Image (cartoon, rainbow, N blue to C red; front, side, top):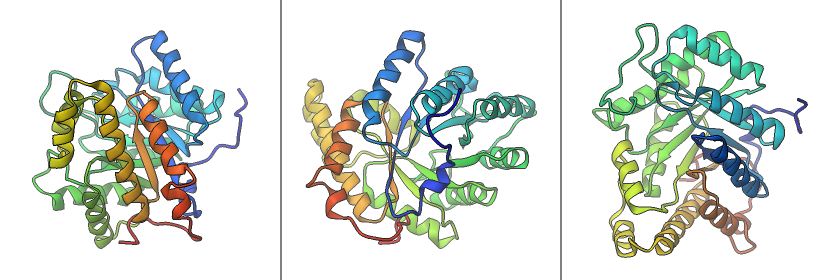
Length: 314
């Protein structure tokens, strides 16, 4: 199938004096869910995302769906797409086959991750012929293929790392092995991002660092997510969410307001864009990005010439 546009490696989107906005989706369980997902992506298409990413289930449980959905987004919708790939449960030969599948599908961008333990398991166990760290996966991919690789960063530290310094050392390994850009785990205090960028720059990491934002739409859900990834919910936001809990519309409005303010702080501070964790829904993301792009939004107020580098203005 002929693509609707010229393919692009995501690294080439940065440093051109424009902000890069992107959306993340996960593969639904059935065909009905897939079609609903594509309606959601269509509704967000007018916001002109720089790219979208598609996650990868634990142990490769959504392997083929990830490849198929990423391919459809790129070739049918004309939006640059990135497939997630994890180490969980895979041998090196299996990973190479997945890379071949992605390459054959015309996918040029991969988010290389270690991955979380499969459901029901409390700790990560590497495949006997696989990898224990994302840095090893990055090295393996770069030694065999010509993909553009994104990696994850943790502003508040990875929950399994003994401290932030150790965690930052792991990120530096991923960068040294050939990562092209960094997308952060979700966080709710912009100061954590700016401090993270400063620490990255201090050890020689000069890649674009894109803040990952998840608008809160469900109180119980966000509590689970933050417990899993080690992020904290600021006291004021937690109080507002508790007060609104039980009223889904009120919770969403609290989440949208906080995420919009957070995005404004990040963009004013020099972030190169925003990566939205959409949870396969469009309303909150549409509202936030619409506000940012409105005539009175931060994107109009902050228009300045020249390229941006994450955190350089702080």
